[in-house]
Length: 348
Ligand code: GTP
Ligand code: MG
Image 1 (cartoon, rainbow, N blue to C red):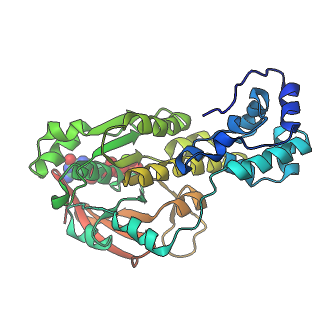
Image 2 (spheres, helix red, strand yellow; image 1 turned 90 degrees about the vertical axis):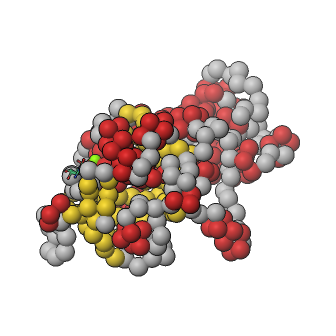
Image 3 (cartoon, rainbow, N blue to C red; image 1 turned 135 degrees about the horizontal axis):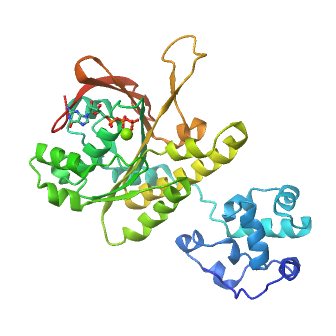
């Protein structure tokens, strides 16, 4: 939403304009919280297209990201004068949707809306205190073949079930980065619940992501495509494979983590707006230096560890069985359960 016309072309002109007194326009003052959250850097008073471009090039897309900078740092990274940077920061602080404190009872009210999606496997549901919660981001990690994609398929099917049967009565958006989504597998699992496979498939919207940038864009596409639909689940399988393949080496790590963080924030937003469940899968890498315990560790580092509300670690066990371990949860004890992957889906 731009509150002024963007006609300036030269970078100097744009910079000069910023130097004029920062005055938040009455239109901006009257905005609702939701409208405030849609403001972009072009809405900052005095920021013309050239300055906006400099800010974008330096990686500042959001007002909040600018609001927390020091003038010296912003001036250096976006190649602006320090006085200009200072004014941009001041305006961002006034206009950014910083979010406020919410009372405990209001939070409890929001928590009351949380739904639980049943895996239809008693031991898994018990481990998760009744099922996979909405308004949460669940990370499922494990080695290749451990069954991450199978969990994604099964929960996609279950999500279409009525609430009374442990489903969420909703539609699913599935971002497939490894080309492993199989409608045939959905058909088998739908039949396993006595559902009409075609009706189930109609409620699962799949897009293949060709690289990490495309994967991030698909989240915006979900926002657009889901208008009028009751989106209850978003699956990203795998969350990290493109990021891992594209950002190689130590020098790229900070950049990768920054992008991944942004991606996760956008996914979490979908969870909050739609009262939906976000399920992401993740690979592990081995730690040859591990002296004790399991030498495997999920990739994605602290960024992912902080973003996930629940983390499930899958392992293969004897006789085709699987072990799921709840690793991180805000309100449940850690623990393990055993289940099987069968022809017609996951079973106790
Ligand atoms: P990567 O994506 O490679 O990291 O692995 P993943 O963790 O996603 O593994 P996935 O969920 O694809 O699990 C594959 C395994 O599920 C197979 O090796 C089988 O053991 C099992 N599986 C898949 N389809 C079927 C099926 O139709 N019947 C049975 N019984 N098992 C199946
Ligand atoms: Mg997989």
